[in-house]
Length: 307
Image 1 (cartoon, helix red, strand yellow):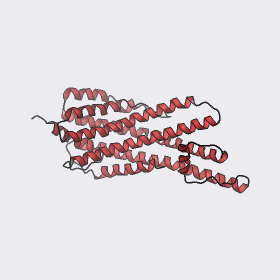
Image 2 (cartoon, one colour):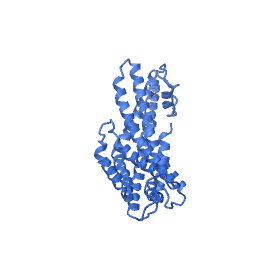
Image 3 (tube, rainbow, N blue to C red):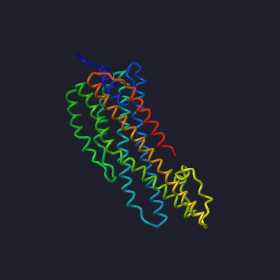
Image 4 (cartoon, rainbow, N blue to C red):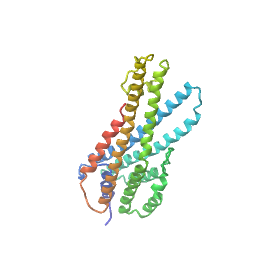
């Protein structure tokens, strides 16, 4: 019996959409696809926040070095590499979203070539993810493995089940990579928190320094007023030390929020992979838990991105 493009779409959508917390009933296809897209966007938003944290960090370090008449060229190369590495991961998340969009289109019209292109782009984006330039970072290829060979085999066979398994393998390997890189993601947020502490020390010790607007916003996000701190008596020094400590605690709350969001996404990915495997085996589990996991991940990423 020949398999129509829409049958392929339903099978792939059942697996792929489960990875982003969709409900079990595929009849409202548009709604299910939109939930799948939302899941991919949650991962993308997480990496987008890490990119912004990296930009904040390098700008503060360059600014402070400039005040001290110290060169900063050596900083830029390392941070540019880090931003590029995170951007590759964000691009992978974007490919997840566009793949779900193409699957949704295939449920309505014959767009099998579009789906083929999106799946191939998804696999390619996973294979291109580079190592993060941070201490202790793993080599992604050691986790991702020879995914390109699996793609080539699928191209030759055109077997629907092999195509489904390829989607499962992509998600599984990304989930493993994500889990291994969790400490690196938290360290990026922690570095930003440390630099906010440096800015606080700067505005207290050198109140005449004019900060760029972006750095003023970092300090304002702490909701502390340093303008009236006394400096010429023991009680004033005690107040300054107390404010500095409180500022660092509040800055580090962002790093803790990043760890929380990262953990939520990791748990949702694990649940997604498990459900993919169940679907590939021909069974149909409840998606209530994985949907709730992705909803929680989105909330945590939103908190992480707040000023």
